Image (cartoon, rainbow, N blue to C red):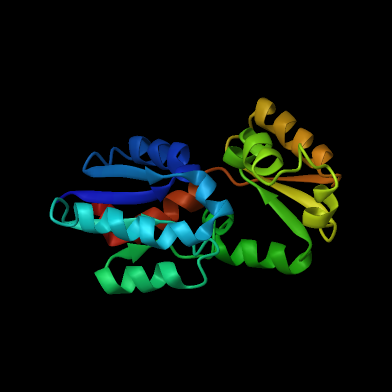
Length: 197
């Protein structure tokens, strides 16, 4: 029994860490580009191509994405091909736990969220790809309605913390840090039967 996880590249490191820690050797991972979050119309067709390319080679397929801005199109693909997806709208809820994340989001709807991956690649994914480095006036257009940056830390790494602070400074928001670790992410994977083969 072999399982394929089709994952967002922003989850690759954490996903591999959980698979190794649990010795889930029957699980393979294929990642799609993390920067597709800036062009979410690519996600559903990209995932569908991966499913079609691999469905004869695996007994189970799991999609490690949230909706991620696809407007329900990803779930249409999931249902069409009868595969499973991690529950939740985005990776923030995977790491924080859906119920806990929902409460955090309700407490302050003006929150910009970071994960370890996004803290690490913030300059490229946000400042460069959204054009803010070339056109600083865009910063307020994108982030003027946000009130804080909340860093959901998976590793409690000081280098990542410094990068998160730099990201918050770059868009003029106060930084708050919440350590999630990987336990809730692992729990979500354990709850999906295909991870167990």
